[in-house]
Length: 339
Picture 1 (cartoon, rainbow, N blue to C red):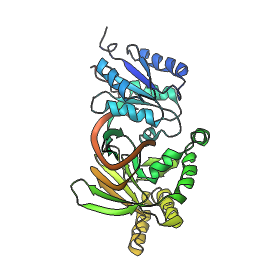
Picture 2 (cartoon, helix red, strand yellow; picture 1 turned 45 degrees about the horizontal axis):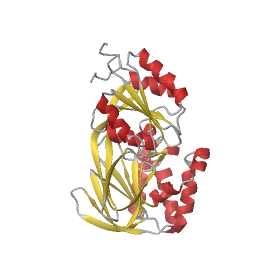
Picture 3 (cartoon, rainbow, N blue to C red; picture 1 turned 45 degrees about the vertical axis):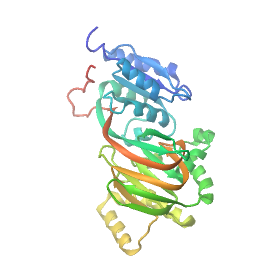
Picture 4 (tube, one colour; picture 1 turned 120 degrees about the vertical axis):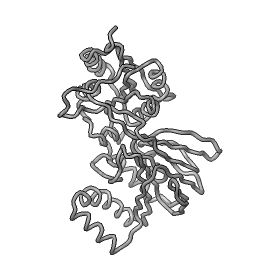
């Protein structure tokens, strides 16, 4: 067996979201075309959404692992790949595709996604890590790729109607938000950035991001970068319905439009000098610890992770390799080194 054929890829897929019979020939033909060995196929399950089977595949010598499913599948597979040197290849599915959107990957052409995985290059990105302490004192640790939240953000994710999400996509989160916001109550949180003093605030939610772009082109964290070694943090403190209107205006108009031009940035500065608003406070750090008076909901990349009374977020710079298209000017594709 030659060096090329000694490389093999694996596909970790969610059988609920993926038509594996349609996907299999696309992947296997691309693997043959590029001289790779036989591809292994492994299903996720409720008990193991991807991390366990991915770790086993890495131990067996996989050279690349495809994550085929929703954001939860991508997150779980990436959690196991971080720090191993084995790259992640994303096959977008479902309504979110948050990491793929933030990396500007193709969302609707599976053949292109597969081809780019085999012929493209590897981009190293950061991965967020969260340590959740529960009410009973137990602790569990997880990874996240895009955003995590504590408070109403997590409540919205947990209460989103799956059938509506399947029918109308990300707009289902708007429905969940309209139901959750009227009954939400601010909560007290003590937060401490890495190497800084502790602060206290009454908030509706705290969002910690590795990336900043949401579906619909909404830039919740406009300065976030997936490979800067930092987490971007948004502390939301809206007061009443008008406060939420201000939040919406900021993330849809100010972050998306005004910040993209020098004139727009001058308008933002002029407004800041006039009326000081704490509707959203933006922070940046390599880590942040949230201590809560009462346990509150936690979400990671849109998935519900239960209640936490203390939540610590950190980042692992450059820990995850992701396959992306090779630059147009490249003379030859960057091949994955043989393990």
